[in-house]
Length: 244
Image 1 (cartoon, rainbow, N blue to C red):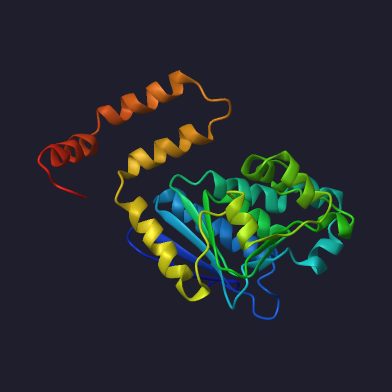
Image 2 (image 1 turned 60 degrees about the vertical axis):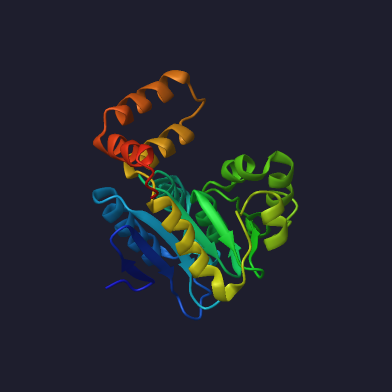
């Protein structure tokens, strides 16, 4: 049984709720291990992933008491960065539903997801330099890709925090919805993706994330899809006037 997560498995998706009462869902070693277990499950049987936090907070950073005791060897192990890279590389799309604080490692976890939606109280930030360290689990380059270099440096260097409206305006989150409707809206977004062909989603994600991009990559992925039974059945249904 997971100590720091609530995991709900459905046919087409897995819903993971970060749950560390009293710690604002701070990411500790136990949570890292349990999220690796979730990744293993989704690599073995690809499904959509919804990540959210319990009790009005996504994750207010990493566990500072644990970070205080880590040294060079632990940094070189990339404890958080390797997990977030694994989440970013999951076969099917991932969605973070952010309510309240997503700071430090919590923000980096949200950045690693393919999509994000937020409640009006969501706040994204990377205050690591104030603790004498840097945001070393992807924020220094993922945030730049998501919102541009200027805004990323405002967050990473000047301590700017992005509220929900800023995050939506800058494209960091897809939309802002009331906290009481956040999970309902998240599932509606996953429902929309689930209606697409799973292999098409998987290959689209691979091509979209491929560094540099190249027409040959697009062609090879399309060649696989053009030969699939799913493509034929979906196009037959479209031509017959059916809707999915």
